[in-house]
Length: 199
Length: 199
DNA sequence: AATTATATTGAACGTCGTTCAGTATTGTGC
DNA sequence: GCACAATACTGAACGACGTTCAATATAATT
Image 1 (cartoon, rainbow over the protein chains, first blue to last red):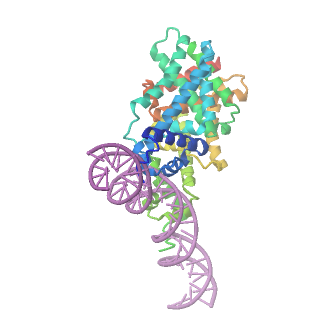
Image 2: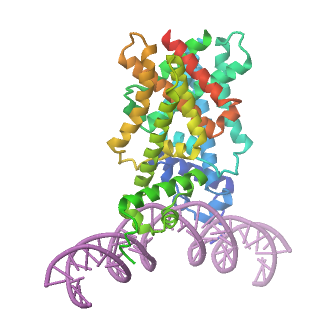
Image 3: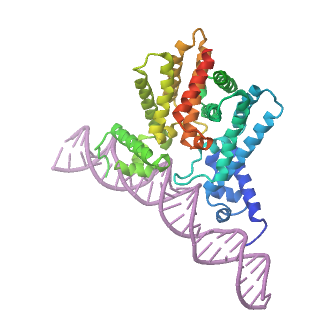
């Protein structure tokens, strides 16, 4: 058969991304394959390659959606808070909570590597940049008189720290280290860093 | 042919691990395959499976060697220093320097996942534990009167932070964030955290 | 109804991890 | 020196993978 036109290209794209997300959430990114994905949406492999450049492209688009959700979730968590310190701490906590709630999706965002000659497209880099910017914005009220360079560095440090906790937690290495509460650890990291940073 | 006995089992193991390390260092872990590895040491796939349980097992043993080297490197870097703060900072710097010098090996240590039902063996966990212990030991002189729980947590926080920086640096996300020097960032993270921790 | 255009297929290619029956070599006992 | 058992090693086979593209079936147009 051909040209069934049951679905537009955009519809197929959406179906594929949703099926991919389901697979990833339930069985991890290792379980993702072109054939499984195709049969999940009632098409065959070939069709996927009309809509996506290849699997790397598809994963990039899944990751973009994950970053969007994470960003939205952090904004939501920020909304009811006024105190600058509380807001910063909340960024860390909601990041950890998101990773904990969607471990496979979160893992895929930072573990997926494009072939070394290929760079992610600008629109994707912007989504990453937006996450750092969130921290920078919240840091500003606490960094009286500090230059924008210091703020950028502090945001990167905080983000890296929280990110590192996530990774070690997900790969179970924090249990080995004797850490009982990941949220406590995050709190301690951010609080102590901020104490040092603010002065 | 059969029973060539050109090499003992232990010799084959060593040859395979060394060939694997060469492949990983030069082309990344994606380039590692049983067939390539076998032909690199002049044997066939079957032989590899006499010496290793499977590729996961082989990778675990490569990672164990990487952890050994990293640990040795950090001890070396520590040796000439006396000041407790300098020693702690050196731990971070030598960690970053190692990751930078051997990015593919370092990546493999924390990106490789065993199938979810399988746990790493105790001897491997001990090697991970030993890294945290290194930080804890160096932290002790700075944590006058703090309980061992506080020290464990501080070590985990510092380690996670530096680890997070490594990851974001390797995946180029720190460039996106506007960070110019990874070593400066590490320094800032550790210094500020310690300032907060020591009080 | 015939023709053109396009949406979709699925077989094909080369690769992968893993297994294991079979084969070639060595050590042992005579 | 020879037969036999024990062992070291092979490599074909299996199912699954990403990716491609000639072939085909349907829809749109004439």
